[in-house]
View 1 (cartoon, rainbow, N blue to C red):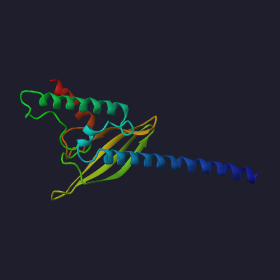
View 2: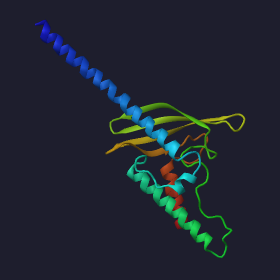
View 3: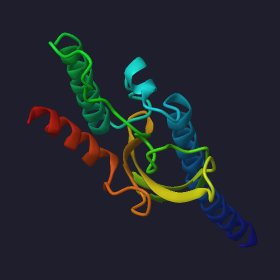
View 4: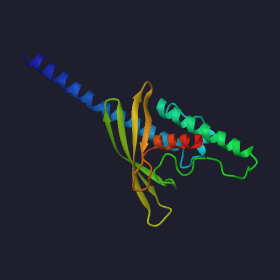
Length: 180
């Protein structure tokens, strides 16, 4: 009688232990994805012009919007270069694209990661210390779980440092502006 009870209790504890390791492993994957974003694309927008948009980092939807916006910008750069006024400024990405502060950031820290089924949100506290006083703000990175792991689906910018709502809206507005 005691032996089956012991086995049953052991099974329950194993299930509970396994259940608790999954969110930790997922949070580690999300942390790695965020670090990959900021190491691969850096603090300036130059990187988006010089390398393909990663389908390892971005969701298919965000990847397509990024590619459309980059191609739109590259087309305008060529159009201006070949125009009668090549000294005019083409439509390019200015400021830090993946950060709420135009100037970019000097450091960041992942404050919290919340997972809900196949979606997650990470609160990222940024710092820009090249001014006095230094600027602190918190952006929210939204992720989705896809075939090959977690992918960044959008970035919601801190309203205290950025008047735009989020990355996806910014990119769509950029594309729309060039069509007008």
